[in-house]
Each structure stands twice: as C-alpha cells, then as structure tokens.
Length: 359
Ligand code: SF4
Ligand code: SF4
Image 1: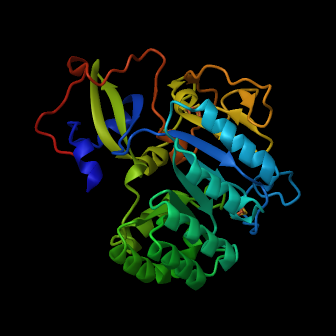
Image 2 (image 1 turned 90 degrees about the vertical axis):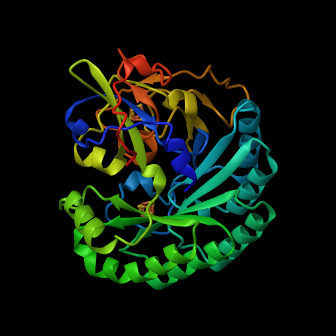
C-alpha cells in the first residue's frame, strides 16, 4: 500500500501500553502530503433530523450564503492560500442540498491550488445531484471524494449502498462512515455482506465506524462488538492512525496508534497544548467567519472571507482552549505539549527500539 513506504520512515516500539504513559506530541501518520485543510460549512440545513444530532447542527431555517457570495469567497480563498495546496471539506448540515452545491464543486475544479474537494454527505439528495457530481468528477479524475455517512435512523440501506456503488463506478473515491449504536447490530450485520463486496471490488472504497456518544449506551462496547465480529473483512481508512510521541522515565518513544483507541482511553484531551490547527487548517462558517479549526480555538473569527475589507492575519499555531479534542480530523492535527520541542530529525532525542516493526 502506498502509505507503507512513508511509515517505514519511522521505527516503532512494539508496545501498545504507551497510552498509559505521558503523551507529549501527536503527529500524522499519513503518506499523503500534509495539505492545508479547509473545512467549509456550506449550510446547517439538512434533509435528515437524526436524534443524536444537536439542533444547531441541523437547522433548516438557518441562513446560508448565495451562489455569488460562495464563488467570490472561493476565489478569494484561492488568493489568500496562494502558496498552499489545499483540500476543501464541504460539511453541513447536508451540503448537497445547498442550491449552489454543483456550481461550487465545479468552481473548485478550475482553481489550481485546490488539490481536492471532499463532500461529507448522508447521500440522501436526489439522483440529479449525483449525476451532476459524476459529470464534474469525470472532467478532473481524483479531484472529488465523498465521505458518505450512514445514519441508520433514516437511511435506506439498499439505496445507500446502490448510490455508493454508482459513485465508485464513476471513479469517485468513497469513504464511508457508519454512525452506530449497539442497538443496531442486526441492521449493520446485514450491511456487512454488501460492504464486503464493495471493499473487495473497489480499491477506492473504505469504511470507518463512527462512535455516537449521546445514545445512553457505551459506544466503545458497540465499536468493539462491531470491530471484532462483523467488520473483520472490511477495509478501514488508513488515515485513522497517528504517531503518538510519549515519554517515560525521561525517554521518548514513538508508536503508531489508532485514533479510536486514543479516544477509548480518554487520552484526547490537549488543553494548553500548542496545536498546528492555526497553521494547517481553516474552518469557514456559513456567514464567512473563518476560524483556525472546526473546534473554533479563537474566541472571535480570524477574518471574514465574504468581506473583502477583512484581512486574514498571519498563520500561527494555537494554544488549545478545549477540554476535549473531539473528532478524528482534529485529533490528527500535529500538536505538542507547550514544553515540547519536537524535531523528527533529532533522533538522539528519541529512544527507538531498532528491532521493532511497524504495526
Ligand atoms: S445527517 Fe448529519 S447533519 Fe443531518 S441531522 Fe443527521 S447527523 Fe445531523
Ligand atoms: S480541540 Fe482544537 S485546538 Fe485543541 S487540540 Fe484539538 S484541534 Fe487543536
């Protein structure tokens, strides 16, 4: 696999117990070049109303920018990030129900500094949206990726799987998130045979299990049951792994860990750490307000993308103000304890087990 080469740069300890030691830094374990990630909240409106989704995340009366404003903003962003290669992650609500969705996607194919656009969707929009997306994707292969979230309360499994198949068939990479609760095992068990077929048929398809925390059940129990029982044969996103730098008895260790195990162990708290969210990412709200990341580490926006008079400040790391770093996309952002000076080339600072294999 492509990312293996990159991981061979590291020499890892075999231990998995370093989660019990002091973690001093998080680094990405991805093969891909580290892109500047733009998380763009296109709309808070949504075609679904999932019971576990807070009302402010799916508000069908919330304001949203019109097409002209969005396209102008996109072009301005291209000018602001002129020396960066970036990926846009279109999020919601449900971004595909915004009337300007396809125009926006098309515009991203024209601007050269945009490496890719990821659409985070529940796949519920009508076929016209998807055929339009497939047409645009055909003009620039590899540019469009879809993160398809399966919300069991409202999604129809057969049409969901069918839609994924049609996207895969047209060459669009699909990353599927199963939003699960332990009470849904029967449904999910049925899904696994279809998912197995897809993962064996398409190399550009993978699956991740997403915990839902406010269901009144232990989400880790569900994850464990699903992971061990039903999903052995389904490929997983490779980028749910990170490099953990830990410290024990004054020595430093690196190991490769799954982001989910970090969350399960309650080690996803980085309050006061220095976080590269301010260097490598933007979060753009529906009104054009720009923050360093979706966690909004600043109390006021950095600038407003839709206001030409609002000037972006110099990019710099942020000091994490939050008790918990919630999701995989924010956990994998490089970060370190304030006292840490992290330099991958200073191998003398790091105690490595030379016999260790990558995991
Ligand atoms: S599909 Fe996503 S945004 Fe819409 S209600 Fe469900 S969780 Fe919320
Ligand atoms: S919550 Fe935000 S600021 Fe804090 S570590 Fe995570 S991404 Fe960085």
